[in-house]
Length: 305
Image 1 (spheres, one colour):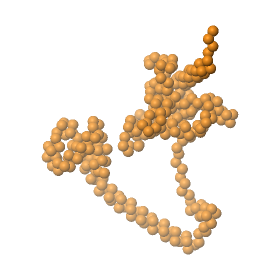
Image 2 (cartoon, rainbow, N blue to C red; image 1 turned 30 degrees about the vertical axis):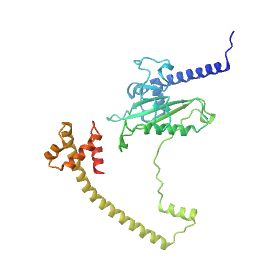
Image 3 (cartoon, rainbow, N blue to C red; image 1 turned 120 degrees about the vertical axis):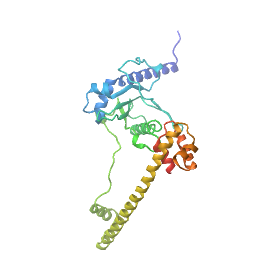
Image 4 (cartoon, rainbow, N blue to C red; image 1 turned 135 degrees about the vertical axis):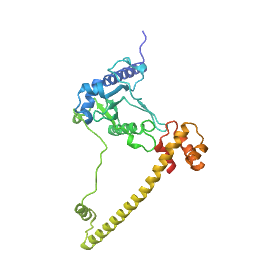
């Protein structure tokens, strides 16, 4: 009778762990389970019913990180499983990150369709040898940066979609059990009041403001206010002139694009609009970079630069 080698046994244990991980992710990817997680962890869904979240707000079928050949997969028609986002996040100069579960959800408020990108991670080891919090922050950052080229291009950062990376730890230390910790990006205004600043100068830096020094500071502040207001006034005037010129450029580009789509040559277009041929040729050249969508805003920004 042949005895199994230690290597063979190790491989069996490793395979058993893989199956366990897959099963865990399959359970978490169920829409009802995800709905409970979203309601408990995300303020956008705290007032929604579980059924509404599962049926109306979770988009498509959440994507599980394991390849299909390695897991018992429900048919694509199964409404209880999710397959939505590409769970591999690749960059040429960076490593590959595999998300456990990735999907999109629609915000319940408002008429406009606004989407969130959500990642769920199952973590069995609370102390894996590196700060788990930093890994979670890294995942969130990658979810944002990977939107470039698909959700937004150029400088349209206003189109970036909000992301959530939710980590479920199955074996936390006693002090962390039955709790939810939230890490987010928040604005903090660090500008204090004058009296507080005077105390800091005196207590931390040993600088006591005399009456004469306070008068000098007040004069300086008044002067800086004048310079600021003068700059604003001049900026508004220049902005108005620039705005008019930019608006004229937008109108010209819009008309030129209509001719481009009809395969009219730049020479004929220049003649029609009574513009210099070189000016129209420049618009043609820049516009070609943005074909076939021809984003007018991007074309005008490049022409105005």
